[in-house]
Image 1 (cartoon, chains in turn brown, cyan):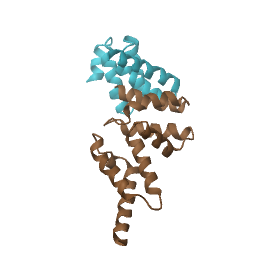
Image 2 (cartoon, each protein chain N blue to C red):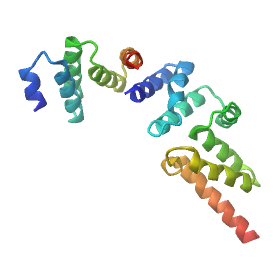
Image 3 (cartoon, rainbow over the protein chains, first blue to last red):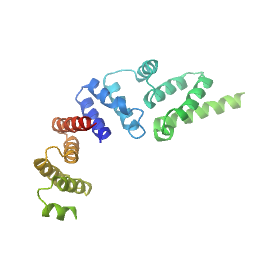
Length: 130
Length: 81
């Protein structure tokens, strides 16, 4: 019940412009096996409404030791956006993900599905070029 | 069955809350909200009814009312540990 109430309340706080309160309510659920998806979506909304660059925010969070699907997806997106992606570093991040969370967020998050597709495409391109 | 039971036990807040959930799931959200209000009238601490009514308010755009109820429920959940 705490998760349902916290996330519903966070959404309302976000819509009311109380972003600090909204973020405080979603933070405990960002890596929760059940609540991470909704919590991440609300945090995306909170960040977007404040005009914050989500990638910069994700890197800042990681430096601060916060490692959740929100940060991971943005960091991976940024790494893949480079013209010459550092595939070894990306592969390390991807490999680390599978043991990091008690759920398979790669399959559950459409944004990450897209990232995996691009990652595989880049890897195939490298293989063919090599 | 719950509807019959709540009619037979009009003083049972849990039954009214259960009827609210069932009625909302059946698609009649207004009737469900009324059942939640009945439950809360009998037992202001009924969290199931408060959560149901808060959700009803949130979906209807009554955000202040929804926030107040969600805050109440969260405070009770926190207090219960």
